Amino acid sequence: MAVAGAERVQAGATRARILRYLARTWPLYLMLVPGMIFVAIFSYYPMYGVVIAFQDFNPGLGFVRSPWVGLKHFRYILTMNPDFYNILRNTIVISTLKIATMQVSAIALALLLNEVKNALFKRTVQTIVYLPHFLSWIVLGGIILDMLGSNGIVTRGLKSLGLESPPMFLGSNKWFVPTLIVTNLWQGVGWSTIIYLAALTSVDPQLHEAAAIDGANRFQRVWHVTLPGISSTIVLLACLSLGNVLQAGFDQVFMLYNPAVYASGDILDTYVFRAGLIAAQYSMAGAIGLIKSAVGFVLIVIAYYLADKYAGYRIF
Image 1 (cartoon, one colour):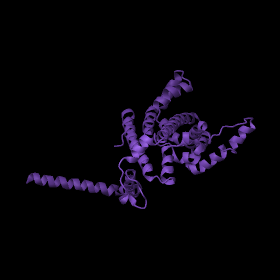
Image 2: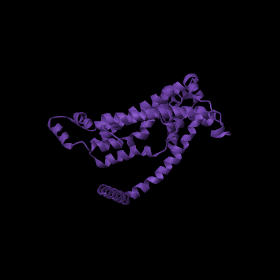
Image 3: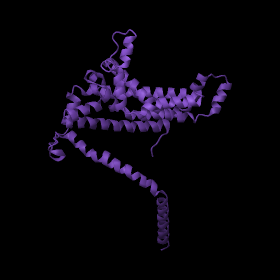
Image 4: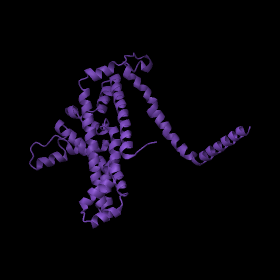
């Protein structure tokens, strides 16, 4: 009897704690509801559509009545599709170059801005380099096409300097990937510096003072004090970026590429778009998308494992 009474008292105390907790935090949970509904409708509900990767999908027959073909499309993609491995290579090359150049450029820009003492000049530069991030690739793509096209301002400027045959930045496989990398930096490097600038505020100023007293110049203080102070942030972001290896930037590539540069600029997302929505090869496009999602999931798991191991970052 005494034990049962103690258990009831303990259960009542637990319920009381839960009710007090919910009374205090229910607005926070309420704020989660729109996001959960959005994710459920636009992320989880459409996942049923992956069944088309295992069918000869016919929109007129729908998901239920379209004939099942098993792994037919996967076998075709991996063994008989002449374009798949070139597209996969393009995707990995472009995304890897984007990640590497963005990391290095963002760190360099953050270090340079951190050394600026004039607050007005620093804020002005930050505003200028942040601005392209808030413009969509529809707008930026139009600007770049006007600048780098055959009659663009850059092409005309190079001709006026005496260069008879300026590079075809958007029409040559040699120049297209570098153009993607540079324009990606223009659009995103300013925004990417925010985390590094925040990390730089945690570096103890006394370490810089001690290094200056010991005779270290500004470059030496950056190399031996500042960079080690933000090394954990650098490692963390490098590890997390691994999950984006197959995300080469559909919006940018789609706005800038053309059939002349498919050999170097066609990526998985643009190929899926053309195969699925233009050529109406729905099942093959679905199979490629499913392969990409599966590989991306593995990369994300590896990224978070590395982030936990080398930077102590955990999501739960």
